[in-house]
Image (cartoon, rainbow, N blue to C red; front, side):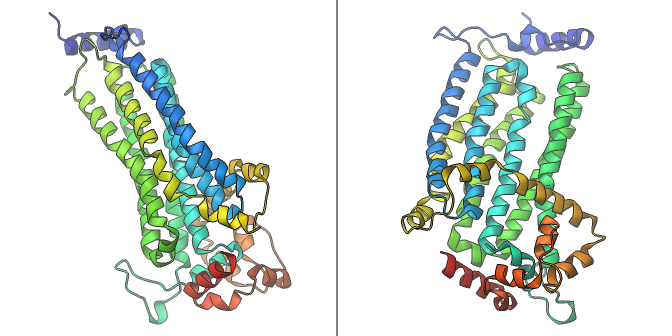
Length: 402
């Protein structure tokens, strides 16, 4: 009797010559209930995806119906919908094994947008008034890697540190876009089972993991530096809920992929090679997305905004809020700023311009526009004097704006 691993080796040799996926890679008998394991997992995955939408859509609608703080809520709603989108992508992978490798990079891209939105949310917590954001960080106490204050001539505020964090986080969008394009090209041009494809996919996966880890470490550094200001907003729970869920899905899937690659686990009568490589990891992700989605009702709650709406603080309509959520211009501007900061050559000039309120505002750094001094003073809203004490500014703004 030929072992499953020997049969797979023979099929891989045949694939190298004919460049197609042999049927043996998805050859599994029906379970006792009359369907294959893939069909069973596809049903469960589809149910989990639908349930994820049923949990998260009402939460998103609550935010949109109580649209009192667009600066914060636009990012919350984006993060909320990341979960069902990831579940849906994995459900389609379960249903369509043949297209799974084309779908596989999409959840990573969705996750990258979620990371950028989470960072934007934290930044908005700290400086709700974007026009004074640069000045806030320039007056924020500078610290070394061990958290000790830097005094004397070396003290220049924390604006450079903030710019570095910005670059480290927004690079995930470029990195994930590059790995998505590379993955699609590899899937379309390489033989489905070949050592060359496996090697190149490994390189792409390592790069994708690296850019994600860099962004996560940057967010953790940002939170650690400003935890006193972020803690009252529940930022730590939001960080743990979002990234903890992604991490929980990543670990078992990575372990399974490694075991399959090293043939520690092999196909059996009822479990095919593609079930191990695609189906089971996708099912785990779908299940986790649904199982942990109720946590977002607490961490990204709409209750504070609902209370504000009852007090008459509503700003925009449901439709305006939805358009703001799907308008990714702020993300694109964040990426554009990253490229400008990454060059490093114009840092001193950008810093000087962002601090020179007599001639230019921080809008020039973000939007490329100028504002005269009287208009800028109106934008500051009376907080200009508080910029010398960032914590005082933050608490003063929070009291006046709820």
